[in-house]
Amino acid sequence: MFEMQTFERKREYNRKAQNTMLSFLNTDGGILYIGIADDGSVYGVDGDIDELARSITNSFRDSVTPDPSGYGRPFLIATPPTVLFQKVCMLVSGAIP
Image (cartoon, rainbow, N blue to C red; front, side, top):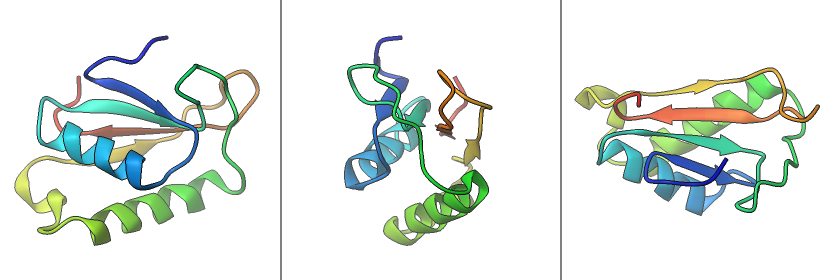
């Protein structure tokens, strides 16, 4: 898979990932995979995937003012089973493409 306007990959959740989610909220939406590098290498995510999902949700909401969930531009976190035997986290934000 290659990156495009509504699809991105980040090896880890960080400021660049937050900016990507915010960009999706301000446009037509998109999907961001955490645990997959820009070049497509699958690294996965460590620890409990549900705890990671809560942490990302709280971190993102705390970093954006006003809270994006109150403006009809939802984001959700889905956890597909695995990619190449690694746990990854899929974030969907804005209008679901």
